[in-house]
Image (cartoon, rainbow, N blue to C red; front, side, top):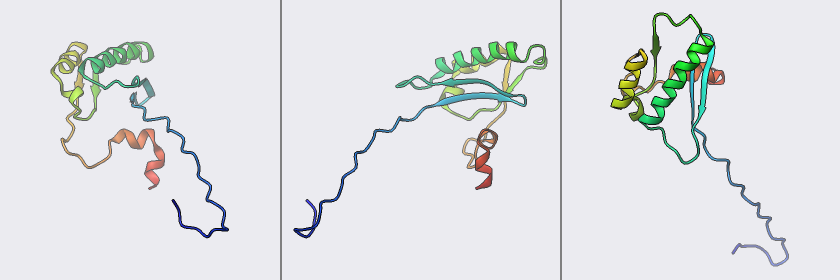
Length: 124
């Protein structure tokens, strides 16, 4: 119901379109650019098993794109998400020879990659 005069026209109602939804993307990059982009399949979450498989893909991508340049190992900076801290992930990191930088547990700052990947955020 709506309040209106008897002679006034009815308001037009617009149809709402469903949004495309959210997409979770994992991006691995270094000083030379983006190495690996992975789109999480719909209705799936990142767990230790999925993230470990991403790390294997990253190792393969590094061997392809940075052949001969990864001599001192790989140093990762990622947040404290449960999939990153899980024991299977830690074992996979050790197996692949990757090391991780410590991330503050409750950092209010944006991740450094946000400014690199989304330069428009610098202007705000």
